[in-house]
Length: 354
Image (cartoon, rainbow, N blue to C red; front, side, top):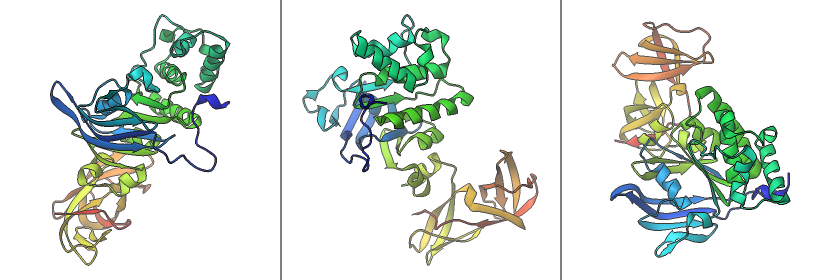
């Protein structure tokens, strides 16, 4: 595959310059704040997920990068050049940004090949070659003459991706690109598009409210709520070291257990839990369900069972009335109403002072 598909990571490591930078970006719709003082740096070739609940400002941030919405304050830079800020405003078509929308937004009266070629603005041998290369990249080389309406939802999204990549944009933006797909197809298309994005090496920002999607595709994830960015980090760091209790609960199931801390341990219903810092006094401890191990005992009762084949999730109520979730890979499925012992088995736990 030749080099004009996009900016690849260089052999001696990733480019550490900033591809996209937001500084203090604030935006509103009809006077109602949608994004508040957002700071964000995205490296060349990085795939960044914007993760958060509906209405948290994810799409507003994406549209601010694209130039589809003008922030009320703050700066947006792409490739070191100011796109918006102060009196500067660069129109969307001059920002070298490609965008894939939720529904693909393909032109129904054009063929697949014509859709991909649309953004190139010319019809010559180079364009035909570019279109053929992109359709091969998205595994649709045999569908060039088909109408978009004859394709599956996943195929349409791949055509939309090829169209967005055709002009070799500096940045690719995807607004919940898998939301219109059914659950079975969603995982497959997500993996395929992830492969394509990494092969091309284009800087990518995508919006999602699905934690699995963000963790599978994102090199880093920016977690948002109420128009603010709470934390930007790798999926592993977000899960293991969330910035606050809200992030802990949003990026995975979390047992938030109130306890007394002393000497680097918290005294809980599951015994002494080691902490990842020192504090004496009331704390809230983060315990993930997979860190609770069930064993014979009478300290707790199974009140709920969800079986997934590879493991089971148990709702557990201790004799003190505390209800928590535990995940267990034991081949023998425990029954609702049975009694168990519960103990902590994991690294030093994240905690917050109460």
